Length: 281
Image (cartoon, rainbow, N blue to C red; front, side, top):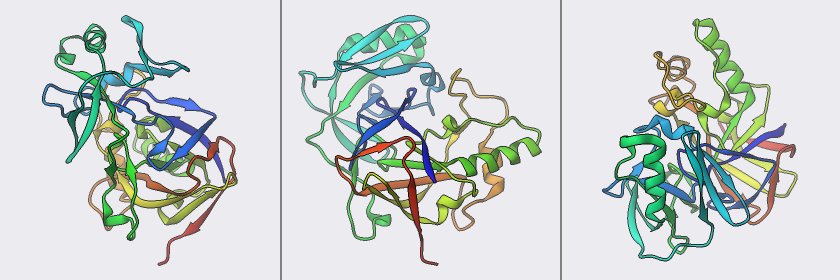
């Protein structure tokens, strides 16, 4: 098996960046979910509330995070930490320390997205703060992440997407691309749902990821990641539910949440050969 795609999402719920390689950290791929949008109550804002966030493209240069949108000129946000007071922001049930970016970003978001972006601002994770991953699936270990939903890595496979798309087409629906699931690491694997049996995934670069928990999917999977719109059918969520790939769990699942167990500071590359170990049954 080989890694066929690596995707970094510097800003939670905005477009991802396909990269050929990335530095590995306990909190995820380099720059992944370092920034997040929050509302006036400092609660996280995602495509669940604003599907149009999918239309904002992201680029990383040596000096800046650059946001772009068809309606406005791009805006560059310096990579060096902004000056300002730390604030507490909320991701699900976690309170995290963050640094606010300038109000210029808020004005830019309003220009790009209109009144629905009223009161939304951009914050940056304060790296001196540690946000722990839930302990239930860590087998006594510990892990941390930035502004991801809960885990530092999300792994998906081409075989599972193929199986899902076959089911969609059989139901008269259109197939979906992998970006509906916003993974970090895509593995080229012929066997559908094979990742659900993996315990670890080790790469030729000397790193090892431990797969912790099936990823329960939400309505973001129904958002067209190119147009920021939601088609009339609740797909692929509806078909995923019918496939019931995790019969012992409620909801629809696709992919596996993972943590880094070996290889801090190492490099993961597209094309890396990876080897899995299997869960004990």
